[in-house]
Length: 132
Image 1 (spheres, rainbow, N blue to C red):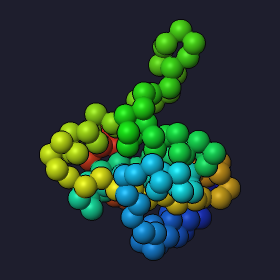
Image 2: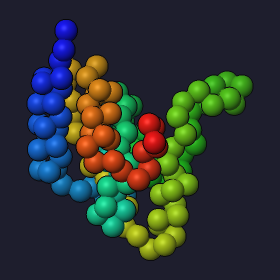
Image 3: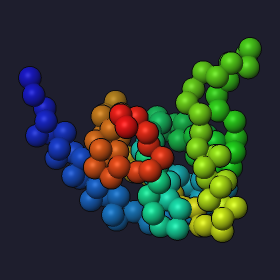
Image 4: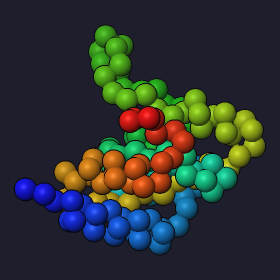
């Protein structure tokens, strides 16, 4: 079975939705209002990173990226999740750049990983390194 046409159409819809979404500021208030399961980080309006998380965990993940909250660790303090982009975000902030973000919601949720990969392939953000 080949679902390429369907995935391409969903990706096209996601790009269209992203264009309509307003930029959120790097504030706790905007982070708390975030709804979605795919997120996009920007520096001075330039897309730098695309990530995904279940909708119920997106606020925590944005906290890690935007405010330097540590990556996920287990009870033995061993990393059990992906490392955040805080170090890169912080460099941008220290350079005087404005950090913003957008989120979109892909439903059903189990499609978010596939669509994230398609969006990364389409936009090729600098901080997404898988497959490079």
